[in-house]
Image (tube, rainbow, N blue to C red; front, side, top):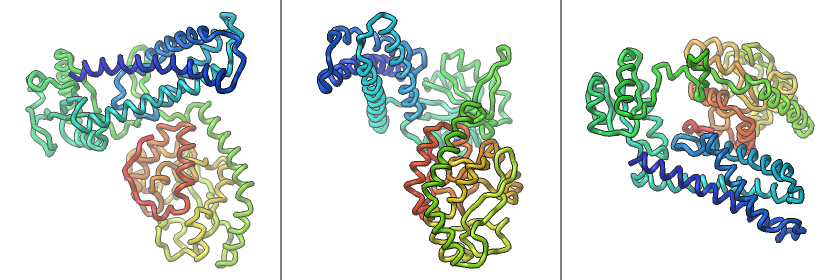
Length: 465
């Protein structure tokens, strides 16, 4: 049933996209020539044909880009970003076409309106569709029946992820393993009984999450699923070492899994981020200079010692640098090994004030300008803790492949100070592996809202970008 529903949903998605794009051109014509009272150099019929052509082009582009497959596990913000980018391509092609076909009297402002209106309609329609599906899935409809193969850590992790987001609409009907485990699902037999289980349960998909010791069964599981014609997805036993967005490379036809796909390894991405950091840090230094002057005076008057607190931290490429802050504590002997806590008797009264408002971190704009840090990124750690955590936490050192930041995805989700380092790294790695400028902008906005009560923020479940 799910296959027929998915086919119908894909067709409906295409039909409504085409209608929305065509309507966007007509609405843009109305905005340009009726609302703004422009001169009509070409007839309404010209824009009708232009809208029909744009709708056809959009359907082709979106279909080639894979936007008409199942979006059950595709994040909405990812799909919305692709829609906006691909629709820009459609608008540019439409603009170029009217000149190549010598329709130079076509209103360029109408094409601009067309891009804005069509993008809003296409994204808005997808948001409504997801809300509708969420409602029906909550009622038990449009569920994808999944048979889980395997038991142990990876199988339990899969169940945890599925349970955490019911919007996926996955109904795990049972599991196959060589012995029963603590998984709260019907036990359907051993690996050798998979073929019989497929015949009895008729799942829409099989998810294989075998532990390493059962890896010799994988070939038989693949063959059984292919023989039955059932879709198979695999959770590798080494999944905890794979990024959330791995890249598949090819060596003369041989598939290679790149475990560490980091967008900022791309020179273009790295240049954009660094240019943004330089311009933003210069602007912020100028804007906050009066506040920094007041903070400097307050620190000097509140307790004896230096105004600027310099502390060695580990940055990009595992290189150490000195991070600057306004001193918020009395000088002490544990400043290079002590763990920051929400309640700390080492704070001065003025230090507590500037820390609540994050004013103590303003000198780090100079770290950003120097290139030691970025505005957004994982928080840099003391060498003492880096040496300790790299032995305890898998993939901990991956965070040092990018510049550390003043704020980051972990910080805006409440993971700062005396909080779980493992959970913090989970957030940091997600940021590193899914970086975009839009993601940075989102974190900046979130920082602005929580910076004045950061010590009251409670830890929340991991959120995906």
